[in-house]
Image (cartoon, rainbow, N blue to C red):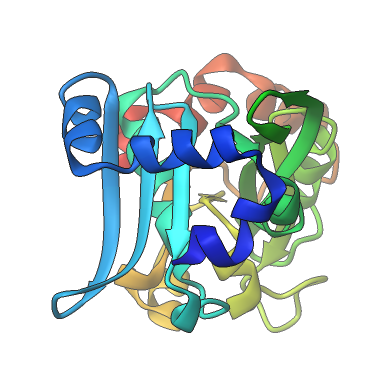
Length: 243
């Protein structure tokens, strides 16, 4: 069992006992009648991974079968869970997790940052929260998307990259960018269409189109104002983005 192999040694006997109570089928069923929900990854009847979310904002459990780790299963489970959580709770800002010490580095790779640490009767915990991984796209990554990156980069709720779709872009979009992103903002519809052609419609994260034409210089005052307007910022968390 993954917990026994990788986690149990970091916790007291009481902490281990509490975990086994937590994963009892009856306990899981009871939680699912309240404010918890679960997503799983399976091949046939074999369970490869499971993620449990509490109150649409807290990662209560994430495990991947030890024989199938380092294959992106945890990352895809987390992305799917956050997408569903944002759909259920459009006001969600930072999903959180209480991580065992050995899992902190893995959660950091998934975009979480440590906010606090504590030690209780059950063992050590790192309190972590996750930013929205936001990819901003225009054609050449010289004006509009670069302006958006400049504006949003200090937002504590977001981790931001900007790219372009043109072969002549300052930084051209890659598969790695798509894999990294949780939400993509396209300045125009044509960028969304290019992304769908390049990477496949079903392989893309949530995309929002801002309908900002290529009429502005870098950090143009009107462009900055549009990007900062509440109706544009609200699109990042709109439930319509997750249909």
